[in-house]
Length: 88
Image (cartoon, rainbow, N blue to C red; front, side, top):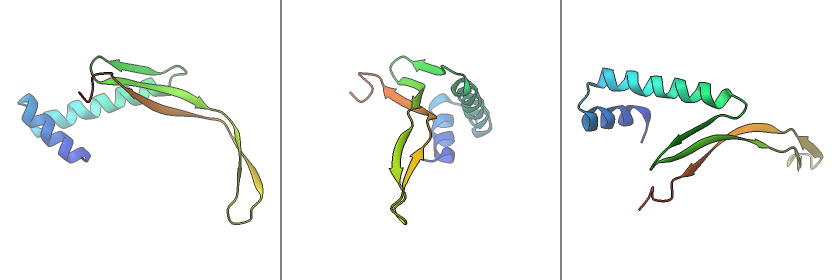
């Protein structure tokens, strides 16, 4: 499902216009981005799951073209943990 399909589904399910559902989805995405940029960003939705930030540690890798070892820097990533009953 892409963004346009999600907007259509949201409009149909919530009884909103497509314009209203696009505004709601865009607002939710802006709020989520702002929260994930925080040091300990976390959004928990009961029955759906939790979006949270984690730090991926630095590690060693290799360049497949040259075969040389390289150091891959640590970085912050967003992870999702679904609720226990999400797919049931």
